[in-house]
Structure formats: C-alpha cells, structure tokens
Image (cartoon, rainbow over all chains, first blue to last red; front, side):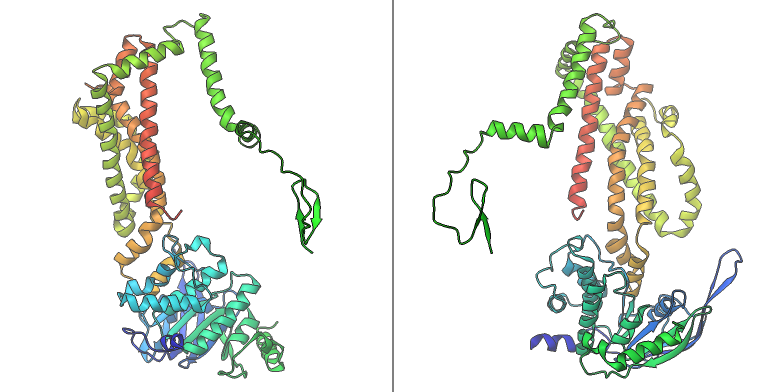
Length: 271
Length: 287
C-alpha cells in the first residue's frame, strides 16, 4: 500500500532525530509578581523516554504534568535541571517536536487542508509533497472529502482529528499531547484513542501524552508516569505489560493485566 | 412495514395498491399563499412599514389640522417639496460632495492611523506601557469638544473638518483593534511558538486574522462617527457642506429645508455604513 510507505518514510527537510527524551532532576518554581509566595510546580523530576515510546503523564490537577510537557516542548524553561532531546539540551521549541493541545486551535479562516498544512507553510517546506501527505493523513483519520470544509462545519471530535493531522504532517520525531481528547465526549475519545494507537504503531513516534484519565493512560502507554501534587513530583513509573507491538483494542480493557495496571496506578494516586 | 400517505391524508400500508387515489387538492392561488406567508410567518414585513406610514400620517394630521405652527413643524408634503428643491438645486451637489469627501477622508485617515498605532502598541511593549493610560483617558473624552480648537488650527476650509472627523472616528478603531489583537487564544500563541513561527508569521497568520472581525466592527461605528465629525466641524464654521446648509436653513427659519437636509444626511450615513458592512462580508468571509 502506497499510503503506508508515505507515512513511515521520513519527510524531506526534517532532521531525522530518533526522539529520545531525557529529563534530569528538573525543578520549576513560579515566582509570583510583587513579592508573593513562590510556587514550587515541580521538584526533582527525572524521566527517560526511549525513542518511539508512548509515555503518559498522569496525575491530579496541579501536579505539574502540563508544565513538564511545556518544558519538553521548549515553551517554558526549567528553574534548574536538564532536559534534552536526542542529547541536545532544549532551549527553544524545535521543528522535530510537535505539540497538540486540549483545544484543536484550528484557524477558522483556513480550510481543513490549509489548517493541516500550517506547519509546512511556517517551515517553508516543499508544498506539493506535503499536500499529498496531508490528504493521506486526513483519509487515515476518516476525514477524506472534508479537506475544503471550514473548521466551524466540523464536530469537536473531527476538529481534533484535523489537529492530529496538523501535528503529524511535518513528521516530527516527538509528539507532545496536552490532554488532547479531554474536551471530547467518551465515544469520540475512545475512537480517537484507538486511531492514535494505530497511527503510532505505523509511524513509531515518541509520544508524551498528558491526561488525568487513568484508563486512557494505561490503554495507550508503554509506561505511565504517575505524578503527585504539592510540590509536583514523580511518584512512580508504572510499566504496562501489554506488549508494544500487539495491536491494542478496547477488548484489552477486559484483560486482567490491564485491570491490575489500572489499580496499581490508582493505588499510587491514593484512589 | 412502510407507511405511505396518500393525497387525502389517510395512511396506507405498502405495497401501495394500484387503486386510484383521490385527486390532489387544487393548488392555492399565489396571492393566497403570499397573504398567508405575510400574515402568519413574517407579519413584521407588513407591520414595520405600516408603522412608518402611520407615523407620517400622524405627522400629516397634526400639521394639516394646524395644531403646530408650520415654522416649527412643516407638513410631510412641504418636506417632500423641499427635498425636491434641494436635490435639484445647482448648489446641492458641491455641498454634498464636500461633506462626503470630509467624512470619507476622515474615516480613511482614522482607520490607517488607528490600526497602525494599535499594531505598534501590540507589538512593542514599551509603546504599549507608555501609551495605554492615554488611550484609556482619551477614549472617554468626547472628542467633538476639540472641534473649535481644530478649526482655529486648521482654518475654515475642508482640512479642519477632516481633522475633526479623524478625531471622532480614531479612538473607537484604536480601542477595538487593541482588544482584537489581544483576543488571540493563549493556546494558539503556544501552537505558533511550538512550530518555531517567526514574529512576522505569527502576526500575519494568526494575530491579524483574529483581530479583523473586531476591526471591522469598529469600522462600521467609525463610518458613522466620521460623518458626525465632519458635520460638527461644518456647524462651527464652513464655506460648504451639508452641515453648513443646515445652519443656513436654521438661520433662515426654513424648517422644511432642514428636514430635507436631515433626510439626505441620514441617507449618506446609511450608505457609508452599508459600504463598510459590504466590505466586512467580503473580507471576513469565514464568519
């Protein structure tokens, strides 16, 4: 199938990083203005993420999981400690790292296709190749025929699919997702999770996925980083023994390994 | 089981029998359908113009019964005659043109200046911090009070009216554009940053399109305000223009001509507003 060839091959113009992420003893302190109390958002966080691994950050609100994600993205600077992607310290955002938010952030004045191609325009990459790639990605998430629709004509789930295509179109080696399906209804969320796994199995990107949904985290991930609050810190990293290469389906949620894993994470979070 | 409904309205079960069905009801006449539409679905289409007709009729009754002196309130027919005199007078087009020119130039200059200042304030933090208190104070000041000062500075000609027009229309555009530029969602900004977009790319691909609806909302208000500015300037002193005609007719106690001029001013205002609203639909096509 030509489609699979296109999606697994590296797009031209992208530095073919492998997507290893090293977070070493990272602290983050937000200092309030006018001499208010400093808030310790993260204390001594160390995580190593292997190339092509799917890792979830799970924890209650205020555990600093989004802060950690933004620091990996180069959108925030750690107060101390070191974050590196493929051995290169993160100082600024980089093109090989894509980011997805809870809101789709599609631009209402762009068609679906032009929204997907936004990173290509910004990177000034070759257009014709990526136009084809974008159309294939849209087809893959079930949006073929919608390329000339406007965002307001799509449902919330469809909009988030477009956002998924947008982050994948430039073929980044790392994809950072900040509760990407958190605003969707349960049905759309589960469908998108299955689709995300299928895409990840095809394209083998490093994915860091922030969520507060434990089932979702265990269902998707190779490893779950369980985080706690005040200060934000890593409580434990739970391995999900469900196999990387085997295709995961909702059926998996019935298996005892899945349930054990969910209860282990719940236990760590004191639930 | 599929149910079908025949022309007489009684349900039948499928498969439909070949038995002859009742002949269809004859289509209603077009005027019957039109009346039904007007009376039941959209009564405002009829009642709204009717209200105007009633008002004019009331006006007619009051004036023809001699309840109000014609010097104070001319009859509708007198205003109609005055309007005809006004529109056919050789001195009318130059006066109309003067006011139009002042209002349009005033609007355009205000639009360019206000948008430029807003973008500078949005992009350069120092300018924003220094300038913002002045914007807050000046926007609540009724800028028409500056009109006499501008007349002294810029003379009795058209340029002083353009300045008054600019000053009346400027602040609404500035304030709205500023809030439009500031209305970019935080996550959209982060998205652009995560894609390593340059400032220029972020401005043209995100910030400017986000602000455009705010800018055009302000343009619509400013179109009317620029006309008001031009007229106020002409009220103070002018050689030509609709505002000058109004003051002259006022001195001459020609209420009929004043009413006719007011109608013309209203039409000009509606035309300017409509033009901007038309442009808005073209530019902000995605709404």
